[in-house]
Amino acid sequence: MELPVTASAQSRQLERFFATRVRPAADRWAARGFQLQALRRFADSAGLQHLPTGTKAWVARYGSVRGVWIQAKGASVANGIVLHLHGGGFVFGSSRSHRGLAVIMSRRTKRPVFVPDYRKAPEHPYPAAADDCLAVYRTLVDRGIPANKIVVSGDSAGGHLTACLLADLSRTGQAMPSHAVLFSPWLDLSGELAAARDKTRRDPFVAASAILACRKAYLGDRDPAEERLAVLAADKSGWPPVLIQVGDTECLIDDARQLAVSLRNAEIPCELQEWPGQIHAFPAFSNLVPEGRQAVRYVADFVSS
Image 1 (cartoon, rainbow, N blue to C red):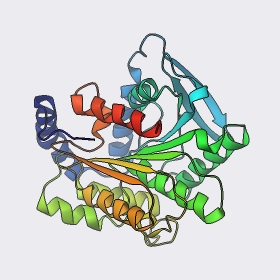
Image 2 (tube, helix red, strand yellow):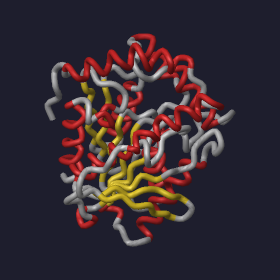
Image 3 (cartoon, helix red, strand yellow):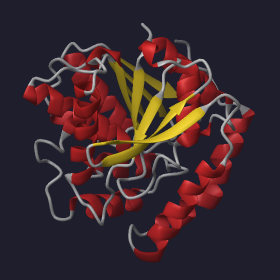
Image 4 (cartoon, helix red, strand yellow):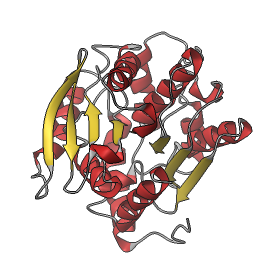
């Protein structure tokens, strides 16, 4: 795919807004107490928007994990499904905050999208979220959805959960999904790659200090180099084709690059797209920037190939 050479006017405006209004707050944010509760409420308020005409949403539970299905008009399980693991640094985000992204994913891929409400830190630290995502995937397969009809996607911390799920399946010899899609994945839980990149080019959205706060909430004193957590070093044997989309303003760009290198070294089909002028998880802002809509259209082409 040929990416835009420069960012659209809408994307430049969005980057300026985040750089001046969001990043200063992110530098002071803590993943606990009132600040965390306020961010959770704000993020979930995105789910108050009305669903487009013809779009259906319903709650489902797989084992102990609740979540929400989104099915756009014209989407059908006959085409397969998307299991989307939402971002939010393992500490916020939900099926409500990511409803807009699920809607456009369903509309473009013509598949229903399931967004599980996995347990979040610090109330439920690692491995709660990873275990929940694995349990949902296994239950979907056990209930009759063929693994090769499932696309697993994830944004930000959900990108780590996606990679962790694939590594879990590979280690245990279980059936893989047909494709994986990662939007701006946070993969190096030490935060070292992000911190180094942020010093070179300041991320307009994500603060390295906030990444460290989220890591502490999720991992506590655990070593991010543990086998199940160190997804960049995981054996990629048997992984499905992977699409990675990341903005070139992001401090997480080197996480994406290192994953692409490890996949190619394992001879796994991988496409890394670095979008000029785009902020963290920009497809989630498809209602504001044309590049977000273009990126999701490409996702639909990728998963149907």
